[in-house]
Length: 129
Image: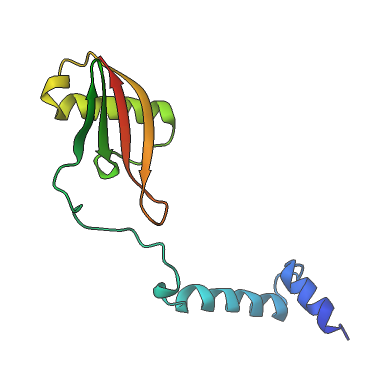
């Protein structure tokens, strides 16, 4: 007869062979957990809704040839890499800002703006003309 420690160890490390009753019980417990766990236990639902401000791109500070813009993250697709993010920010600024429509500017710095939970809600983009 196996001790309780051996049973828990074999269950934790999933060392039971298929077609044994122990294996079937473990699978049944996992399925019960997956299908009957309430959604409210997990707080990873996406946030929906329109942002509080209707402007999603704001000019923060013009300084000679360098300017800083804040771009709401909902304007962009989720970025995978920084070069892709810089390219997408450049395109969004060029399309949305009349004074930047010629595309003759470069992005100097991208700084994420975070809310209280640490979620990125916008990007502060400094450009150079």
